[in-house]
Image 1: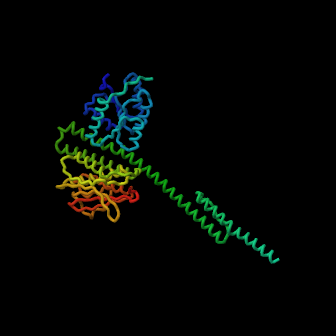
Image 2: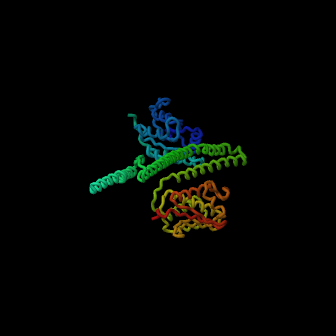
Image 3: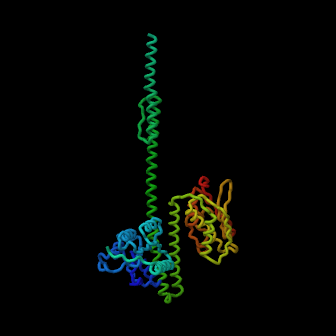
Length: 151
Length: 309
């Protein structure tokens, strides 16, 4: 399976933000299918093929996870922690894409093992640029870690 | 008989001396030791009506009033701590939640322009562009207000900062952001200041950006960075030959959201100098300005002498 068929998991509760992110990806010619999870639990269900996503057990992991920090049920840092604690998803590229550049968020994000931290700009032109660069870097330039089989 | 009487009376005197003077002094000594050791509840009153008794009651009154003051200070400290926590939570929420709606306003205005631009006349497009510009401006305002509160809360890490190098780097980045301007920079060598590098960086960035903006309509713009000494006080300065202002307005300059020029003329948010002033206050220093309309402005700052090298 080529990398452009791999899904991108966008974890975002704000519908406006997910629409704008999808729009930005489309405009940057990122072809990968994008799955939107609306809270932290849904994101983990998707990754670990649980609940509504139980039929995904044999599917490969996403190419990358784009993670907002403020989320219902389980926040972004909680999702990140769970991803890094599980052997299957330990190496999965996770990019935090959030409103805040508060020092405490940056520190916790990197401490918990985020691969990248990008702040959503207000200016859509800048937002588009950021998403484009993210797509180019994580989907084209970066070599993904080898897939691990379930223990 | 006479001798025995003398002996008896001196024993009596010694006994009285011991009971009325020495014992209270021993107790006073013990009381001061207790209080010095942190036991502010120690009761010393010897119960007598003489001067020693009076003194012991004054002593107790003193520890009592100290106890009350300490309790008050403790209460104020707790209030301050919870207030700080509230500010922290407030700016966290501002940072996360207030920018979101602005992103929607800007992003969807742009979406309409892109997808339906051919159906809009010039007025319709202009309206959308104004919505975008306003959202972006509010985004900048929020960022700067957060910057202002960060400056207030940041821990100071004092070290020697090379101000000349810092100013040159900022000048270079300003030149790169907007090419085509010919500003003559005069940045003195070997300017150092003992301060928090991150905060001084924020202050210098603001001062130099202001100088850069307010010389944008000047024929031969010059920006100077240097140091000076007046009445034994060392001060650093950032000066320009730009639009300047009337000194009658100088005291309004350092409050948040104050500006002396229309935003359309010079695009500044009006928070920059409030941030600079707060940086200087954090260093127990001050900032002042000398300006003249159409001849430029020079901002001077000094920081606490004891924290110099």
